[in-house]
Length: 119
Length: 110
Image (cartoon, rainbow over all chains, first blue to last red; front, top):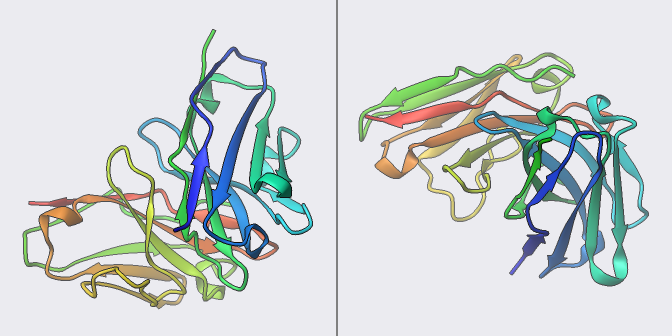
């Protein structure tokens, strides 16, 4: 079955960077685009961006341009999301979620990674 | 890209029907066939309930249905059951490989 397994919780200081990983299994890695969505405590879902695992091309939400960087490692079927210049309002659960080629909905989700930004 | 507009809350008694709206613009909801709805229980990851405005993934009860009129999409839950109590989010493809979410609606089963 399809599984997206994310790395563990992180605590970071303001101004630092964080990397969250998402390891995919149960499907052909390059058949699905991988997206990142975050959810601040008690708040709604927010789309951050997408990476095409086949070629590595990315597209980011305007809000995160210049601070987010998504990469992939096809040999391990893993996608990475780096977020820099962290602020307290970046405290959130970060999810990876995939979209099958030709479709436009988020089919499978990782378990979420809590990133806490605090001095 | 502005978030889609959803009512913050909705409620209904067991067995009743409830409809949640999701309003966008002609650049997203009104101009895209790629509106989807997600259910999220506390502490859990979201789960897709409706995709491409009206399509239901296998395994999702047929009590859940989707529709759209103009720039507003809707999710209807018929025959409410206690386990339907959750947060619901709409999302739409907004062109140029970008997506936008609604603010979410908390559904309470009375």
